[in-house]
Figure (tube, rainbow, N blue to C red):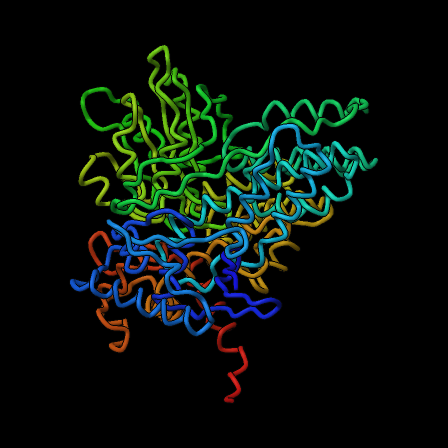
Length: 598
């Protein structure tokens, strides 16, 4: 018998594999197996099972859960004493024969002096142990939030080393197979992009290598306002010059030791200390460039600059909130660009969400905070796409009296209440600024040739910056397409067609869909119901059906998700473009075939 943790949590016997059902014992088993042969504290296990909603009888319930897990072991012929009750918690005994995680770490612990062919063979064996979505059947928010990211990082570091060895062995075709998908799933890992581009060039695909470099450069510039690292820039220059790269070295990046996962008493959400190995933090940040085509938001930029530059004792903290795609990050980056001369310590951008949309932990973010400038220069931090106040409160006040911009769909009222600061809740662009953005992106000549069509296109985009940029990108990549024809095409299905196939983050359905799917089922249905109303611009609690529960609470959840705006004072309102999206989703849902009863 063996446990399989690197995929859905399973118990295997030879070729037979039993995937465990989601349950408290399954979550308990996962928490223990993530820390094999180590004492896992009672506090950690309680949080793994109940997070912050622990019942008064949680400790007794934990003991019952251990008994249930031992009964499951008996069912599969596993010795129940593998779970040891020790002072302060429990310990799960495991070896490479009984747990895939132990075997994975054993295979990746390559001794000095091992030849590269043997190392590559062992690391490929280790990667082959990963089977499907990690712990997809484990219903523990805490484990998915705090424990799994470190485990995923271990795999990515091994894959990076494998690709180095494959390049050194001349196996460039295998590198392409390994990295095409990974570079899209993990766009922030520049080393993966560098390896992929190098493999393309070494296989004679110079044009594709340069195209891939441009994709990476554009993504970094648009999302973070930075240029590719020096390694990528040197590689691009070599490709442009058609230089011989020479033999690839397989000794560039040995696999680091596994990240340490804290299994002791766990603090409240967002208060975890950074543990284990972390990436080095740069001591200086590159200069931010202006956001391409940025237009409008003058009042917000001036007020934000005044707050950020203030040294009169007020917290230099600014919250930029609003609907998905409303332009929060663009405003933060543009304002930072305009005031960066007053921050000799540099401007540092920290994404608070992973590429898949999940939130990074406070510990992960804290590990990436830049150290104080050795010369004492004040820094400006941008914490982008904050999920909740719990996520950022442990990071405040920022080190060295740094000024901070937080972008979030939420108001982050609790953060402002405890740390001060100013809040800017963004609305859609005024018509004049929406047209200005289109003109800046398309060019004055193309805009001037079809001003009425441009106004119609802006209206179809709801004056949302994300939608406007997607529409402009479609026109820029199709020089023969007129603005009027683009508007006609878009009018047939505005939400569905505002999408760029090569990047799901530049997609209105994907961005708004992610915000909607993050809601609880009641709030999700309420959004679709309210969006179908003719008067969605003036919504009151009475408009929420009684079977949805507390109407005001439902409306407030939609406000916090950025899908509804509260009055000033007065009724709630839904942006017209979000209403179009809600109706589109409602029609799509109504068109789904009914489930066939079994």
